[in-house]
Amino acid sequence: MNIAAAPNDMSDIIEADRTHVWHHLLQHKSLETVDPKIMVEGKGMRLWDATGKEHLDAVSGGVWTVNVGYGRESIADAVRDQLVKLNYFANSAGSIPGALFSERLISKMPGMSRVYLTNSGTEANEKAFKLVRQIAHKRYGGKKHKILFRERDYHGSSITAISAGGQPERNAQYGPYTPGFVEVPHCCEYRAQWDVENYGERAADAIEEVILREGPDTVGALCLEPVTAGGGVITPPEGYWQRVQEICRKYEILLHIDEVVCGVGRTGKWFGYQHYGIEPDFVTMAKGVASGYAAIACMVTTERVFDLFKDDAGDPLNHFRDISTFGGCTAGPAAALENMRIIEDEGLLDNTTAMGERLVSNLHVLMEKHQAIGDVRGKGLFCGAELVADRATKEPVAEKLVQAVVGDCASQGVIIGATNRSLPGLNNTLCLSPALIATSDDIDQITDAIDGALTRVFG
Ligand SMILES: Cc1ncc(COP(=O)(O)O)c(C=O)c1O
Image (cartoon, rainbow, N blue to C red; front, side, top):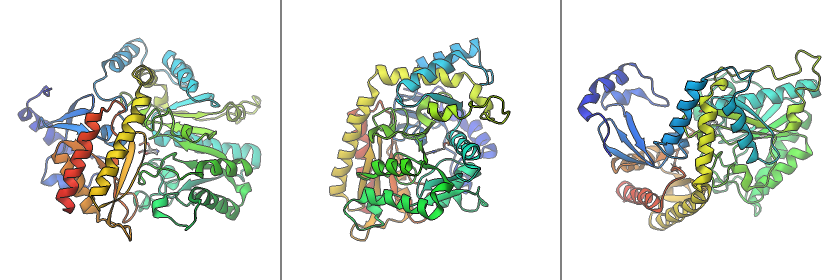
């Protein structure tokens, strides 16, 4: 496939970008000597940039979003048809795609019943935080308002979302933070904090210790990622989730699962939490909901929570007094509905499980060959390889070497990711999250590229 415009035609675009665009996460000094990367076209797993170079995308749009792959005309058609019919009305009223998508989504989430539409993962999480605070006011005189979050987890970019964020390098210099958010320890067994047999239960017990320290009557909710994503692809150890659920029930703490990354197929089930048999009170999701074909995110909750906000219609403050303007855009649910249809009709959950196993197994083979790989973790098509300078001490490799591996893969035409400005000294995990349509050949191409890169960078 060829991009529509020849590389020479792109100089104006590159100049406009260099002069006026402020890129996300980027230290812009680098663009004084190299051109900004501009992506032009995508099809399936592949992308073409402004120089005409082809890339195999092993990170689904950089940040684990394009779950069904690029160039899906049926989603574009669904969005177009909906936009010419009705593009927008505030979500205080309903829409046809909003109703149909909510119904289809809930059919995949036993125990849940209500969908609140919004437009970013940050915002979806913020909705759940607001509900927890309002429930505290309604039922506990404001006291049970604290929200627990976990070291190494991430829940978004706003000041309140970083207040619930366990990644110091994302948070530094943006304080003062929103009060009432309290950190619990991470559960990464490779970076063990306790020397015990039943690590999962021990890590969950650490949450209970925080609850007891803070006072259970002050803690309203616990917010966790099912698999910690940007904090290092941390799959929960055996026994962890079961104990977390018990603790939440014991102290009447609402369980908020942030599925912004894991949701809608990424781990081989519709939702990451569904691997662990847990019953959340809130589930938030964003990236894969419409695979980036439209901006849509959701906060989903139970009828039990929903009822609390309509049990006294005479009180003008009883309901959820919240709105997201773009939560009324119909393009989002129209795209999301078609996105779900594709995942079902193409059997992408099963493919994710099979290709995820292949990816992890290939990474284990690389681990035998390359001492630099200290640990391999993953669930479905969300995998990570932690790079270390010394396997015995687990000393992380220098960040510039991680970036050299990413850069080497890029020069081979394979885009991989790495933990980025997350934890001081621990931005050392390669991240892989190819689209759910990945084939065995794609997976092998990705791990072959990493093999070559590790050989060149570490010898
Ligand atoms: C687990 C998790 N939650 C929330 C967010 C925030 O989502 P958004 O960037 O759409 O606000 C992210 C973004 O990477 C995420 O990884």
